[in-house]
Image (cartoon, rainbow, N blue to C red):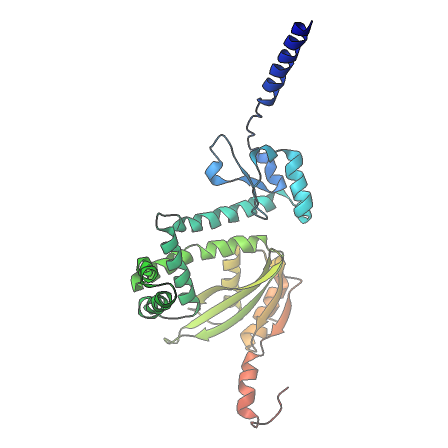
Length: 312
């Protein structure tokens, strides 16, 4: 009797072992998952084990989490504001994510840490408006002095592998700036409102230049960027200025209906009541408010008022 019971136990044990050793199949990505804000990490797109990535928070989940219910739960828990967003919203997010990823491929070479250090130094140089030669004449020698003092000679020699010559800095700046207009255009397509600041000035050749800056919302943060600079080869009247701005906004597919503000100086071409630039913009942007730039007046006040006169 025990023999039969023992055999039964063994059979049950084998069955349980077989059941436990059964593995779940790898899940495949479905294009419908984009409505939950998920794409596949590019490196795993063609593999047998694709990994889902949230394009909102950049969080990755396991392959077994690639189920509509789990992806929906992630969206509802962490990004409830995106639940009713149209599919175009997520497509634009995906497009922006791919452009960012392509930009960062420059940092994935064998000497990536030295190349990345070169890019970071170049970014600081151009942001501070310094000459490109400052990289090898000031930044690198100063960095080597500090590292040698704190970490020793061996660590200081590692800095020599960072390319900071004038030509290297130029190439880094050109690479970073190559798609900056494209990235800005992508962000502007996703903004809900924007405002413009317009000014007309002349360069050293006495050529009139139109400068336009833009303020817009992106990911719940207000951003302020330089939009474009165009030469005014013909008359600098309101009609020509409006045509240039309108043509550029059409090029990047930014509709006037999103414009809520225009800031200009007191020139007749800018703030004329009937045919000025502000009036022309308000005809195509019904929610646009016109404001006057007061910086010029603030610069003149100290020159015409006594030194100790209280300005504010």
